[in-house]
Length: 88
Image (cartoon, rainbow, N blue to C red; front, side, top):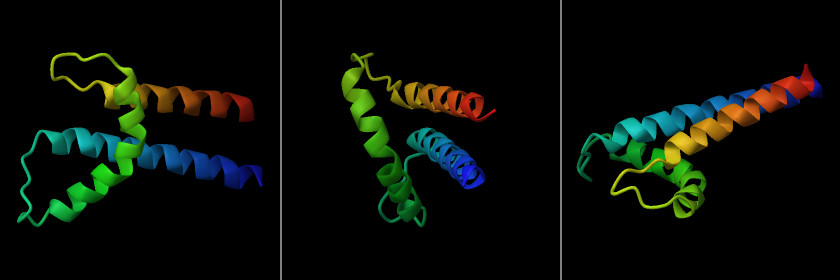
């Protein structure tokens, strides 16, 4: 059971990392509704917004800069380190 839990948490954190990095990169690229990439962009935004939204509301306004992905990536890194140390 421990192996399954470790693997599950590791895969979940890596998937969130990839989704968050994809969201950051996609935020720099204008994608219209007629683009073939629109479904992918929508999926990435739907997967990451429940995590980023609450963090964004807690952070002060930085004049148009969104630091919530950075905060979430740091939190994920922190959680993964604690989880790894607890199981080591």
